[in-house]
Amino acid sequence: MPGDLHTHTNFSDGSSDIELLPLLARRAGLTSLAVSDHDTELCIQYAQQHPVDQGVRLIPAVEMTGFDTRRGRRVHMLCYCPELTPGLLAFFQLMKDRRNAVTSLSIDELEKMYPQFTRAAAKAFSRRSGVTYKTHLIRLLYEYGYTDGIYKDLYRELFGRGGKVLHDPAYEPLEKVLDLIHEAGGVAVLAHPSVYQSMELAEELASEGRIDGVEIDHPRNTPEDRQALHVLAERWNLIVTGGTDFHGMHMSKPTPLGAFTTSDEMIERIWKLAEQKKQAKVVPHYGKSDEF
Image (tube, rainbow, N blue to C red; front, side, top):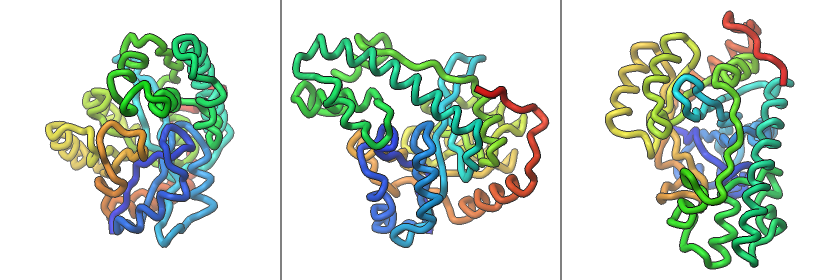
């Protein structure tokens, strides 16, 4: 049976405990699951400690954030089966510190705008991750009756482009993120290219051998991009993945876990490639990333 290889929990900006997801996956008829929270080792460690949960095989994973400096766009990379190298852990700590710094600024401003909004109440949502996200801030306003959902007009007013309390963290160049993934023996998959208009980047990375796969079966990939990605994957023999990008109640549109999936064939390719990378223990020819 297939697997959902793109999901989130309250280890980052999702709403659910990680312990719930294997149960949801089993009830959806899945046999594999990757919890891929943002820029954190927590979901990787959980999968390593629980290789099979509720009869579902857990694939260690993380969704890493980088920046396409050439085009000025954010990029998400799904990384499967990495070793927790010092470089990877340093990157996660860097992103944790940067995210907490900018959301702290937003919290200061929201406390002035909404007297009922408090830092302690907002940070309660991040007690498992140690990282506060914009989602946590809007969720508190949702619970206090200021909006009728997470990603509604108030979210766009506060956190959309030019939003009143928007403060984005700085992101590391994509090249550095890819170096870290490969040094950790991880399988690098470009996430949802349609979301950040990354089709040109996908072609570029595939032709340079910088990625191992592309995520195609995703709720926000356009039909046109999906078709083009299938052509790209065939041309460069890329792994093809799929996942819901599940965030629990922190979603703009209903998308239950298991609605978008990765085939058994591709899941086995991920496991085999990860094993080959670890056995080779060869640093890619394009160089080793600088230490943070």
